[in-house]
Image 1 (tube, rainbow, N blue to C red):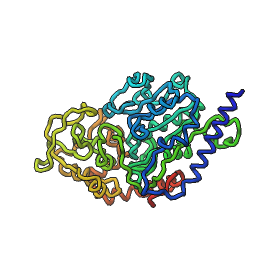
Image 2: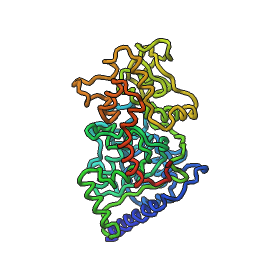
Image 3: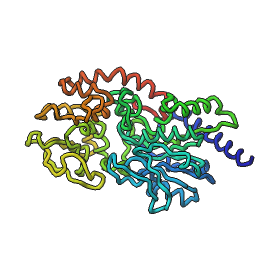
Image 4: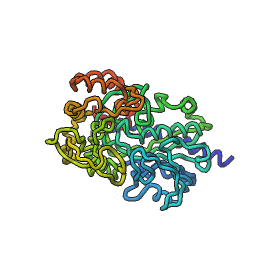
Amino acid sequence: MKSSRCIFALLLLFTAVSAQQNNSKTVPAKTTARIIPGAERMSTWLPLIKGKRLAVFANQTSMVGNTHLVDTLLKLGIHIPVIFGPEHGFRGTADAGEKVGNAVDQKTGIPIVSLYGSKKKPSADDLKDADILLFDMQDVGCRFYTYFASMEDYIETALEFHKPLLILDRPNPNGFYVDGPVMDLKYRSNIGREAVPIVYGMTIGEYAFMVTGEQWLSAKANETYRYYKQAKNSADTPFHFLVIKCLNYDHNSRYVLPVRPSPNLPDMQSVYLYPSTCFFEGTVLSEGRGTSTPFQVFGHPSLPKNLYAFTPQPNEGAKASKNYGKVCYGWNLGGSPEFVLKEVNSRVQLKWLIEAYRLFPVKDSFFIIPKSGLPENYFFTKLAGNTTLMQQIKAGTPEADIRKTWEPGLTAFKKMRKKYLLYPDFE
């Protein structure tokens, strides 16, 4: 009975702290001060997990200052029976899309369960020794980046198994704008989970409130969430989740990532360009994997030889990709972060894709063709979230006209997004 009362007290405390954080979302952030991620606000959330067994979903970006979150918690005596790892693995060294199996972390001896690939959600057996689930990973604010889809599955798991969930929020390095086509749910995949634009301008924590508030989860998870909303002041509330906000962050911030979020986003230039140049993953062009500047350079051997030349080669985090060992001709968008920010100009830029298609000599082979040959199965379609963009590029539709077709979806999304923001917005 005493243990039950402690759990109820913990759940009620989760409710109180979350409500307090939501009510504070209109307080202006002090953008001149150092931005402090949620993980570093340990005095806020550490008392909530003392004496509890913690399942941690994390990777190499899950840092508390210069120390990994898992190492920090172990030094503080927190018991961690299991770690969950995303795409690229817990230590963040696997290639994009590479199968990452279960393992044991060599440094800590803790079992690691991979939640990327065929298994996307923890099982009951995975969670049998966990009292609380924790999520802490650095997202880059782009729809086809898989970490926020992994978080959505984790939220579903927490609700379905009635486990409290703690999300340590981190700034969005592309959180200062919203742009791109809103995805058509017919083309849902792990690189496009919900009807959001390519750049959605929300932190992981804000996105978590949106997927729960809009009831985008499984039927069972949505039902549990509705029950919580109705019974949040009751002592028998079975579940709640808490987002620990960042300090000194708002949506005008230009947050510089202290750790690369994945092997092929090595610096801020790649992070800023990624929403625009990742389209080239759906084409036969190299998107720069196998170089020191992925997503900053792109090209193909058959493009004009007076363009920028580079030769992609296998490297750690990009062991296999397109056009390895071949001289490619194309573009180099690199420069200082400030230069790249100016080039991006708070938009998903299509000019490079349009020009590459215009110059490509064999138009029918520009986009990678799936075995089925059906437009809905093209990888480019999954990236764009529709079949329309590919048709527009092929038809030579001007970028301004393409952007007009995005406006209704963007307007509706921005209105919905406003309901879930925890930080002052850019507009």
